[in-house]
Image (cartoon, rainbow over the protein chains, first blue to last red):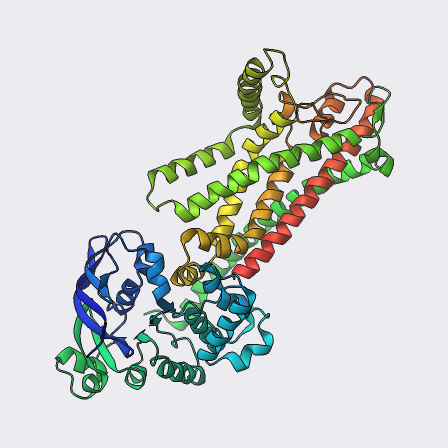
Length: 252
Length: 312
């Protein structure tokens, strides 16, 4: 791995007394897709939410260790969480468009960043939706409510909305788990195109998806990072027994 | 082992018992429902029947005349409107801000928030006459008289009952209604939407302003309407703080007294100089007040059901 985007050192997370993430250390490379896999409750989503400090919202969570994004510890006192989240976008498991128009959904982030110029906003909306491969479907109905879109369209709109803030890193929390196979393959294609420009970290419980979309795979089990390697290696010759058991379907 | 036959007998004998019990319980519940409807219809029926005679456009658009034994109730209607408007201006922002604090900012185990919630619940069950006495003691005798001492060299101006003090007293009474409605509305905004906004780099306040509040605007409206309808019907809080027996002119400023529908009914039924003549007025006034509060509640119910549908 030549370009390190994120370096995690001994990161632990506690819900109250309970240790949910145990001394995670890993390196996430730039402009690659890293998949986080593991059985439900293994901490992969919790870990993902550590990367943009989404766990700040949950009461009684304590985090120890380091999360270095481009060398900066995002849990440092001097770091502004709002800036972190602008740089690190997130796509959620359940598509969550705002009950506003398609246009306003995408323009939401830029507007928050103080962009008021209509022309500039138009441009951002178009570029973002093109990047999310949904421009052609939506360009004639930008003023329609986003709630009227299909699940797959909503999810791609949410990806477009995330891109509109021009993040470096995109976190995806099981982005296709609620979608039909066609929508899923569209999202996977999209992930493939986006990794040129973005570092993508995707949580998935679908191992074929991890194998198809990712360059690196990290296997989590009971709050621990069991192993992380090139996706090919993980799926062909995992070094740990638990990983092998999981990917061959012996548990999970 | 039971044979099939005895099993069958066992069930059939029990079934008879259950049938009687079931029918009895169904009967009781039906009776209760019918009773409630009957009471409602009797009340409405009497009021409509007795009030219909006097109820007319003229009645709601003219002043009372002849020692309030004739004429209309225009000043009482306008007084009621002014009361609820000033009350809403005071109570809605205050209540909404409190609700935003409680749902958005207060930590789950915050002792302060628990104390605030306890106070709101307590406030909601305080008898309305207590609010009236509080208004008299606090707003009129303390704030108003104090202001007169400082600004008017002791000359009586604010230290007496008026629209402002009555409205503020009423706003205290309706505050819990508003807070609870707004809180409920804020809670219907799903966590996913807040997270979507925060994940795009919005601050908490931006999220509240641009996602949470627009999504709960109808809830805030419901709360306001319910508060207004409660405020329009209450008499006790304004008894000592601003309601007038009779005024020949409409109030011109916040420091004037006002007439009020609920208070007018009270006056008509207890202080009448000629019961024969005022009885129809009393019923027609009641009818007006009832139409006013029922229609407000109806609007609130409609908006609320829309919110519920949206939340699902």
